[in-house]
Amino acid sequence: MFILKQFLKRLILPPMPWILLLVLVVIFWNRRWARKVLLATLILITLLHSGPVLYLARHGLESRYPPITDPLQVEPYDAIVVLGGGVIPAGGLIPFPAMSESMFRRLEEAWRLYKLLPRPIIVSGGHVDPFTHPRGKTNIAPDYLLLWGVPAEHIITESNSRDTYESAIEVKKILDRKGWKRYLLVTSAVHMPRSMLAFQRVVPEPIPAPGDFTLGERQFSPFRLFPSEDAAEQITATLHEYIGLINYRWRTWSYSDR
View 1 (cartoon, rainbow, N blue to C red):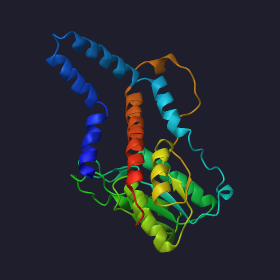
View 2: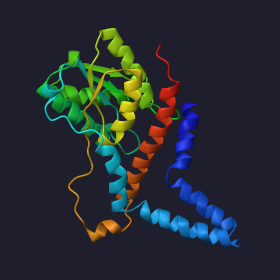
View 3: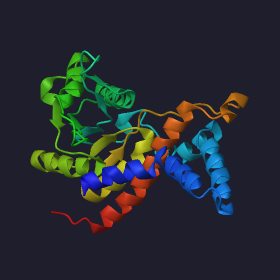
């Protein structure tokens, strides 16, 4: 089921829909409706590559939970849970593994909160692609935390989960084993609504502590009206979150506590 879901995501998210629509237009070009589909495809591609659409789509997710500026205002809690956000494995021309930008900013937020009020940090997230070798990717985040001064006894990792919902299940095992209840949940702001949906159902009591915000002060620029690669990439990631919310609502209905 997990592998099937990964394939379906590739079919649903851009650029695959545009490719399929354009193939459809080519096959049925002599039909009048095919030219209408072509026009609609061009409009959609333009809109979903533009800055204003990106801001509107992403704002609905990133604005849902405010950041925690002072953890003393939300204590007591027993741990800080930070969700993995991707790792670039070593191989080819890459000499050593590294964290993606979103993972680094999540980990940085967890470290900031730890410095203000030290609590054990649980790093959750394993290898997503079943067709590639993990290559020790889960060791990177703990190495950074150690480098930043977090003692080894305050770092816990789990690498069995492949998505956010599985992270909630695996983190629950750790919290139950430790006898911990409340915890800070650290992830990207755009990813927080989906994460809270999963964790609130599987392992209460999460306290949302979003980091990795991408929407700064809103300023008008005519350049943002033009389609751009950066906007397209972020809109695709945003669409992934909205689709994930729909999927997780169904999964929370079907989940039963073990």
